[in-house]
Length: 403
Ligand SMILES: *Cc1c(COP(=O)(O)O)cnc(C)c1O
Ligand SMILES: [Zn+2]
Image (tube, rainbow, N blue to C red; front, top):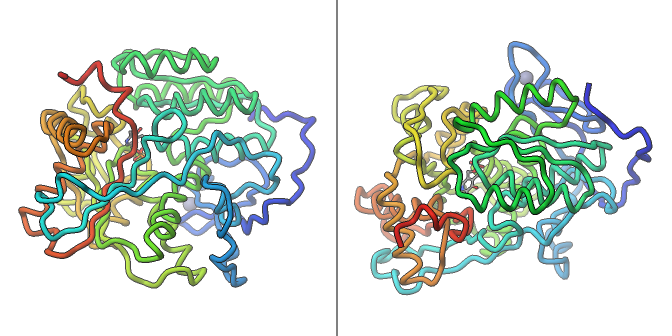
């Protein structure tokens, strides 16, 4: 059983959240959002669960005017009920930056970066973990555990410290030292694993079962997705409610990709945007390209693929739990999937730093290379507007970059 703090008082509803319930996108089964949930309980389904909202009441986007520049400006479409339970370090509302000195390479394509590197703990994981830790607090949870490729662990450690709950982090040994140091500094219990994130996942899962801890592994609970989807709301709001034609996203577990798609859907239901959707591109590391293989092989789910070390540790996810949903989004959006080798990520990282003044994560750098390929292949067409979603700061990865 999950450990719940019995002292917790029931949440008073002060956020104006329109959350109604949780729903399984695969089998349609509905669940109450008032108690702790992980995945669909149907043993033949076990899909990730989605939070659902009542979006039919004519909520106007004018409410956003004057709100704080964090992801909580979208609190009506987030699952928190009580303002008091929001655990925030100022995550979200990151800038959208146009290309400057590399624009000649983009030619007549307008290319912008959504730059997540300024988030607390240096990555967009702050959004998902911020939402999950807040909801865990609201549900009275004492200990949160996660497997991580690096950034999710640091984010969990920081938000748990802020919330006053315990964090347990399982991380591959082959992760740059700074990801481990930050966990220690934020007071988390860190377990280094001689293996990849799937091995971390198995071990963390067992610990969660034994001790009754809440596990926030990617898409095995519904709330990280809600935090990450705020990137979709921001992209729309910051681009004056006109979505780009193409979005490139560095895909590990796929939370961001699925979250963006969910946000677009919700905003259309709210009447905030129309039916135009960007074509979504999953960018992977060549050493860990299960989604790319499955997409081009017309498969509904991905195989387990792990070619070993990559400098983009966030992309070393051998088989995303939500592989079916990722592939569905790519197909619904008329998108595609493409893999980039480490050497090219490294080159792109340096090019963006040297000419754009942005020291982005290798995961984000992969997008620049992917853009160039898709443009020269003609998949990205003249005049199309392209958004590259840089997920993190490069500062944490420098020990693996040949400066
Ligand atoms: C976690 C991570 C990713 C992958 O995100 P998913 O939501 O798991 O697809 C990409 N880039 C960075 C920097 C990350 O930390
Ligand atoms: Zn189900």
